[in-house]
Length: 262
Ligand code: SF4
Image (tube, rainbow, N blue to C red; front, side, top):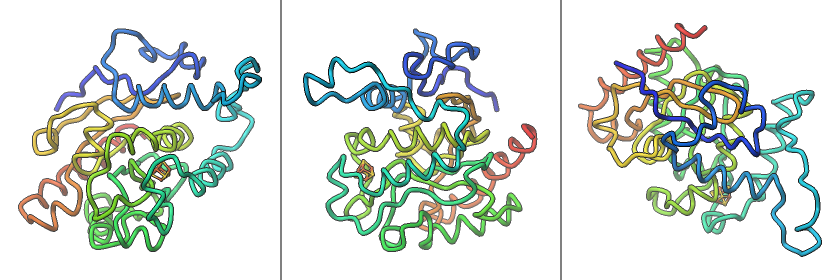
């Protein structure tokens, strides 16, 4: 399986000046992910001021606290969580019980990204705790010899889409600021996307997970780079057990990738 070279991730050199010195980051003309362009738009607006008044429009840009290397990433992640907890940037805020931000080791080398919280996750505030989550936890143990506490698990959107529908593009766009910051602060070496919405969002593709699984992709994000491995959402393996061996296989590949980078 070859690693694809055409996925620069979401780097905005104007917002992340340090990225200019990193090979291959922020080059124009490369394929951009949806999340990259969304991140550029939202991060540019949010970190270089989101002016609401004429006075604010002429204010000088404020430094992005996430670029302050003297500050602890775990502490900063807590600040992003605090912001997410009060977020009303999209309509998913209306019916949520809890914002489901993420769980696990904030310094993990391995990050799992699903599409959005379900009913159990909305009720508890923790991602992947229902039947799908229990399967993921079991597969982590079986195929990777890891616990949930040793990885980081999150979703593309942090609030439950009604009826467990897929998140809409505008909801993903509204929420991308949080995923971008999680990636920037946790800095994973390996990312496993679970299911179609997460995979399509991060890889900016319309190709379905059935065709994409079994591949590896180079994925760049602000300040870092990871190997992205797409696979089925655990719920797809629960619905159709024929998917389970492939999900297991992909996790074995993720473990091998993790070991090769450590
Ligand atoms: S899904 Fe994301 S953007 Fe929408 S309200 Fe929840 S935290 Fe905010």
